Image (cartoon, rainbow, N blue to C red):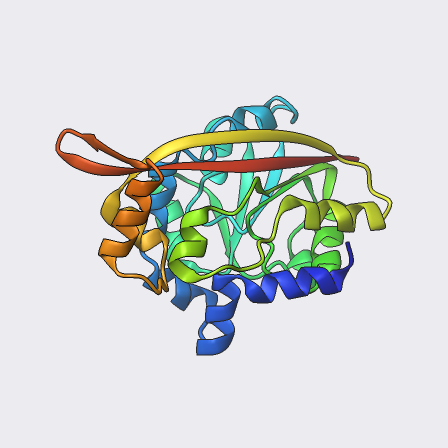
Length: 251
C-alpha cells in the first residue's frame, strides 16, 4: 500500500471532500456537524478499546491523543490517572472535551510544527484522525513522539450498505491502508479487532448519512427491507454494526 493509494481513498471520503469543495476549516466542519458527540455516545465507541489500551500502558504515563475530538480516549485515560495532551484542529471539539474533565489541550493539526512544540510523551494515540495526505509523515511523527509505544485506531469490516444506498458507492479507507504504510516503513505492529452492535434513533441515523441522495421514505424502506428497524418504548431505532481495529506499535 503506497501513499498515493491513501490519498486517493482520502479524497473520496465525505469529510475530506467537504473541506476541499467548500474551502472550510476543520473547526467550521465540526461546528456544522454538531451531532458528533451525541453520535459517539450512542454508538458505544470506543468501548473495549480503552481498557485494552490501559492494559498495555504503564501507570501515570504521559499520552498524546492526536485528533482527540470530544474526548473519547482523552477523558477515560485522564480519569485512569494518566496525563493526557489532547490535540485537535477544532476548538469547538476541544471546548466540549474540557467540559467533561480537566485535560491539557492544544488546538492544532498534527504537523511538523506541533511535533516540534509538544515534548515527547510515553505513548501516542491517533483514532480516526488520519486526515493528512502525507500519511507516512503523520505516522512517523506519531511513532517517534511516543517513546514507549503508539496506538492507532481505524475502521475494519465492510462499508455499511446504508451509506452506499443513501450517498452512492465510495472507496472506504480501512486500517489496511495504515498497516500497509507501516509495513513499507519496516515497523512491526499488533492487531486487535473490536465489534460494536448498537442502535441509533431514526432521526440520528438520518443525520449520520449526511449528503444523502435519498428521501426519508426511501431510507426507511431500505432499512425495513434489511431488517434493521426496531421499536423500543415507542421510539424507532436503527441497528448498526461497526468494526474497529486497534493497531499497537511497541518501542
